[in-house]
Length: 322
Image 1 (cartoon, rainbow, N blue to C red):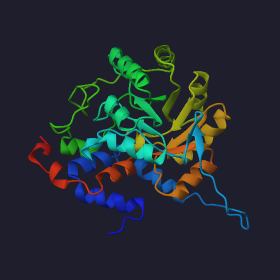
Image 2 (image 1 turned 90 degrees about the vertical axis):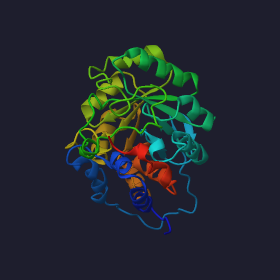
Image 3 (image 1 turned 135 degrees about the vertical axis):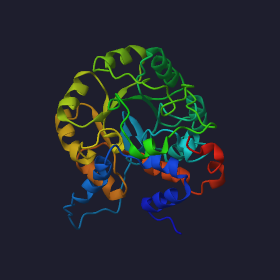
Image 4 (image 1 turned 180 degrees about the vertical axis):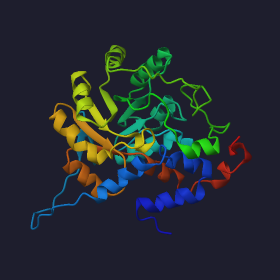
């Protein structure tokens, strides 16, 4: 079958990935209402087209915190890429470099930061951080990312506790033995010990992060004008309007619906980006028209990794749920 749009890659990934891997990537929290609303909300936004404009010359380049990219789409942080392809995040980083866009590597990467850096030297890479109860782990990751040439630090703010993703519970999801989180070297709940993420994180921890690094700080997971104003007052350089792909808190707004109030609150003081529900070029255009500087895609990048996956590699008994 010819692959002509993202939904084709989604269908392919669903067909060929093991169910436990597909369910993990596709999962939303609880009823998946927010996950689905991320996509549906774009369908309710309509263009007001103007005609007879000279569009013979188009330039879709933009800049993220001063660094030019070829078009306003980046790759959002998602975990466990080796569930979709053996090279995992190394392949993702190479693809982002080839397209000259930004790749945000996840704390939950199955390749090391060194491997990701070596796979795509000279590319625009940011590092996404979850703050651990053991702050020394987070400090080491931040300083390692800066030393390896990552150009931004993305703090995820919407995961004090892991969302309840029912299919993962039903499947008893665990990483298979041949895959681990290489930079944390821990294995249990989602590759980490239970209760390893710190639910006590507050706005004051922005200052703690600032003491560790010279990297610009981008905060991910903002959905309200109140939090957008707090982000600006605490000195972040960017905001990603995000609801974690609907994987955390079900019942929250679609990100495209939350974008307008965040942009209005920020008033150009920091750059505003968006993830969640982007599936077509027209979705990108809608987000840009409503004030986003750039959008980031998560699940579609994983579907791309899964295309022409070596199915037998994953269908071994080692992947069976306990």
